[in-house]
Image 1: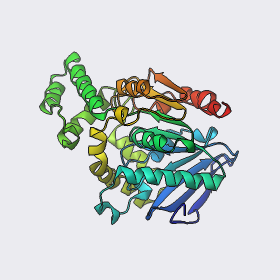
Image 2: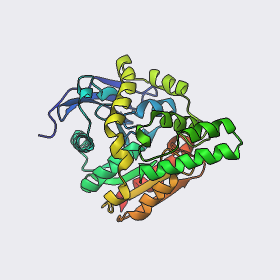
Image 3: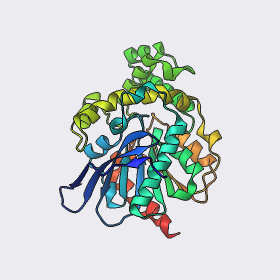
Image 4: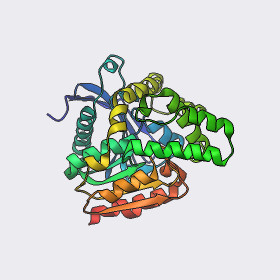
Amino acid sequence: MLLDSVEKPLSNLREENGTGTIIKEYIQINGVRQGIIIESLNKGNPLLLFLHGGPGFPVYPIIKAHDIRLEQFFDVCYWDQRGAGMSYHVKDAKKQLTVEQLVDDTIQVINYLRNKYSQDKVFLLGHSWGTFLGSLVARDKPELFHAYIGIGQIGSAKESEKETYHFILQTAIAKRDNRAQKQIEKVAFNDTYYKNRSYGAIREKFTNKYGGGFKRTGYSHFKILKHVFTCPHYSFQERMNIFPGSIYSYQSLGHIMATTDLVELIPTLNLPVFILQGVHDYQTTYTQAKRFYDSIEAPYKKMYTFHHSAHAPFIEEEERFYTIMQNDVLEIMKR
């Protein structure tokens, strides 16, 4: 049996322009009720599953706040992974999340979409942590996908973090920002950086300040809160769940992400691969994304450098992103 059980859609909403649908559903996956939102222009477009980052931070509120319209090209499924947002449950948060659970959950969601829309394959897009999860799923089940798309691709998180620490320290020195330099040097980088909350706070503050965070122009906590709490189609409780879900997910998965080198774990991907990376990304660095790209063997692969972007090229260079999706990614179906 593909899924434990599937509930009817909670809502079936028309988009404001009257041409498409937004469907919000809860489906039972491996014993856990999980939420998905599917956006479609009702044209029978190919399916795309968007794997969000964090771990544990749903991308849908950010997508809606910035009016990103992937549904021009795909029927897009935004799934809140186990323990995140629509899929966060207090009782389940007492149990440790595992990568193996999320990999299997991802495959279940994909098979649900394939059955629902009568399509043999989907496009798999991972962003940030979603590239960690997506790379593993693409490695294990390449036959399910037209292509894998990695944005903010992880290679070695630890090596990436070393680069980030060097970036913020050297930028503070170059700017003669003595106060910032002292703060950064006070939390020197080491192998257990992912456990150090003080380091995490300093890193987030200065990647954001120096243009290497989510967006080059910065993405303040106030804006994040605003975008979460004005997100359509989420209940108030689901909006609230994003924050404990993010903490829970990171506590469960942070160690694995921080100590795993995907270059060693994934030498081959037996499907077309597209890597889209911002030069100024110091959440998952360009160097590590390029290292991942260079190392993998794939039947077809292509990497795109976004010179004016940090961690979110789909927002910062939106038109170029759309062009790549339309002219390159979708063209893979004709090969």
